[in-house]
Image (tube, rainbow, N blue to C red; front, side, top):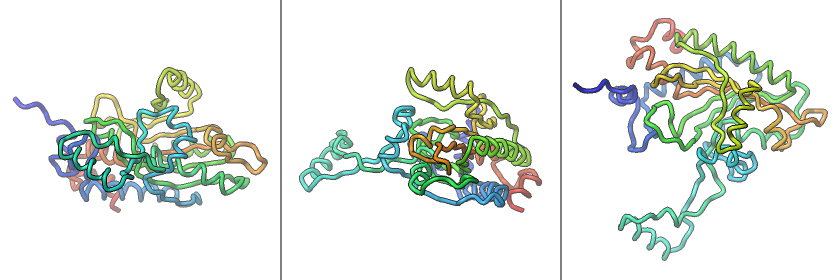
Amino acid sequence: MDATPSFLDQMIAAGHLVPTGVDGLYGRSGMFEDVIARFEAAVTDIGKDDGAEVLRFPPAVTRKQIETSGYMKSFPQLAGTVHSFCGGDHDHALLLEKIDTGEDWTQDQVATDVALTPAACYPLYPMMAAQGALPEAGRLFDVQSYCFRHEPSTDPCRMQLFRMREYVRAGTPDQVQDFRELWIERAKSLIGQLELPFDVVPANDPFFGRAGKMMKLSQRDQGLKLEMVIPVANAQPTACLSFNYHQDHFATTWGVELADGAPAHTGCVGFGLERLALALFKHHGLDVRGWPAGVRGLLWG
């Protein structure tokens, strides 16, 4: 007897995901994209009166930003950098010869000044620092970007390239923590209306190495990272939203200051858009026409 198809197999069979031959790298159907667009519209509607500055960055940052941010210290296993061919005609001939003979031609690639975006908020901090001290009310941003993390997996929720929608708050500790609490309640309401089971739990980022173990414990002990987890493809629920309080980490790194010259604090709420679409297909079915009336009403009006 054949084994029960995995959720990934079901999504591929339904045409919602298109395999490429690399784990974690998929094409998406028009319906899959429409679900994400409708979900984003619902998020935008919730935050429409907050006065957020809307910014959309390309899915790349400068290599200098990756280095300065400390990402390579904390998450080298996830980082992606852009390399390109920079040789002449002779080098090109050698490259083609290696491809023809099945040799490794990537050793001839040279690192560029570009790296793949690890999180949608990363370009914000140097931008804020360059624009001077924050106003008394702080600043609020609405950002979205494709992000890259090198963790190939057959879990459809663990894509290597995925989109992250974020609201990012910069200001005093009280301003940032009030922002986070507000969005936790908003997210609970939204995901509840979408009739998805969820829980909000303490979490930590996947810090690398021995020092990373201590950083994980510290992050959990201080409650700096909370995740909204939803059962999707595995027995272990998947983190689909995160609520992060960075304290003054990014502000100190980049020089983001309050009006009085003190380091600002920052925090963000992040929506994993592909993961939330997958959760909707998992719990409501592969055909959106059969989704509950309340969910369809919220998303499609």
